[in-house]
Image 1 (cartoon, helix red, strand yellow):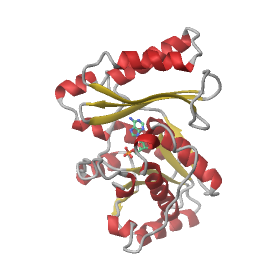
Image 2 (image 1 turned 90 degrees about the vertical axis):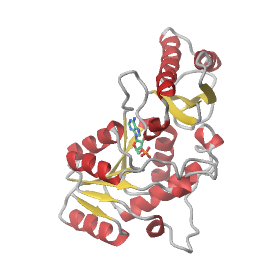
Image 3 (image 1 turned 60 degrees about the vertical axis):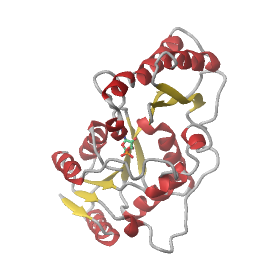
Image 4 (image 1 turned 45 degrees about the vertical axis):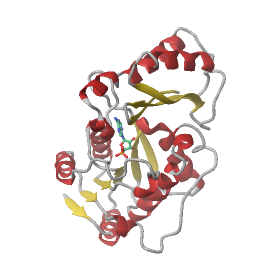
Amino acid sequence: MEILTTIKETRDKVKEWKAQGLKVALVPTMGYLHEGHRSLIDRAHKENDKVVVSIFVNPMQFGPNEDLDAYPRDLDRDAAICEAGGVDIIFHPSVEEMYGPDFQSYADMHVLPEKLCGASRPVHFRGVQTVVSKLFHIIPAQRAYFGQKDAQQLAIIRRMVIDMDFDIEIIGCPIIREDDGLAKSSRNTYLSEEERKQAVILNQSLNKGMEAIEAGEKDAAKIKQIITDNLNTCPLAKIDYVEVVSFDTIQPIEKVEGAVLIAIAVYIGTTRLIDNRIIL
Ligand code: AMP
C-alpha cells in the first residue's frame, strides 16, 4: 500500500491501472477510520481490482462554529486499518494541495440539500459536493462507495453524478453499528462515558418509529411525534431535527409510501449525532 499526497501521482497511478483494464474503487473518508469505513473498504475490495481510500478532513464542509480543528485524526492507525483491508492507495492530500490560493469554484445543488442537515449546516453540502467532485476528477474510479449513515449525502452524490454526467457508479452501503445499536461514527469519540450510554437513544427512537410503521401507521406526523417523544425521555438529548422525507427529493411527506427516509440529528451533550432508517 502506498500513501500518496499529490494529485498528480495519484491520478497517474489510477490512469495506469485503468489502461491495464483494471476496475478501480474509491472510498472517500475524513479518516479516523472505524468498522463503518472498513465495511465500505471490504465491499470495494471484493467488487474491484484496486481500492483507493481518500483521507481528507475537508475544511470546506465545516461551518465557522463546527469541529474542524477538534475533528479526530490518526493517520498511522488509519493506514493499519487500510492495509489490513487490502487497500492499494491512501490519497492523503494537504489542504493546500486540494485548495490552491486562488481557489474559487464550487459544486452546489438546489433542492436536496435544503432540509435535514443542510438546514442546520448551511455550507456543509456545498463543501461535500465540491470535494467529492474533485476526488472524482483526481481518482477516475469506476465505482465509489458511500455509507447510508449519511443518507442525505448519498442522495446528493447520486443526483450530482446524474446531473453532471460523472462516469462513476455510486454504491450505497448499510449502516454499521456498535453492539448496543449506536451507529459507528468518528464523532462518537467525543462522548463522555455517560453520554455514550445515553447515545443509544437515537437508534432506540428510530426503532419505535419503525415499530409503528410495521404496525400499519402511515401518518408521517404521528411517526415524527413517536420518535420525538422517545428522544425527549433522554436527559442529555437535544433534538436538532426529526424528519420523515421522500428519499428521492429529501422533502417532507405526509404519508409513508414509496422510498422514505426517516432521519434524525440529536445533540448528546455538545456532540451532534445523526442516524436514520431508509424504507425502500
Ligand atoms: P466520514 O469519514 O465520516 O466522512 O465517512 C466516510 C464514509 O463512511 C461516508 O460515506 C459515510 O457515510 C461512511 N460511514 C461513516 N460511518 C458509517 C457507518 N457507521 N456505517 C456505514 N458507513 C459509514
